[in-house]
Image (cartoon, rainbow, N blue to C red):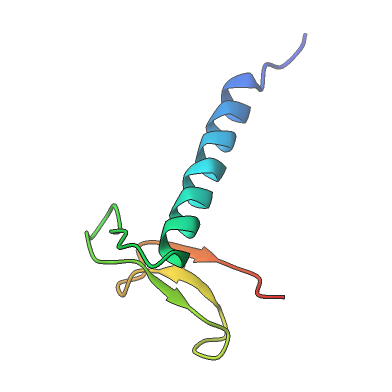
Length: 68
């Protein structure tokens, strides 16, 4: 019996693409709103926090980035 992971793979690929698009738009200086709380997403630099990335003020959205 073979397991079919095609649905999971498609969902993972779409999620990755969506996050990549969000990161790109935020780093271009465009306003992107959190899907949960509708607050703007902010770029958090390594100088500002131990966990740099993109997040909203409430923390609903949190995309950790590696700044190396």
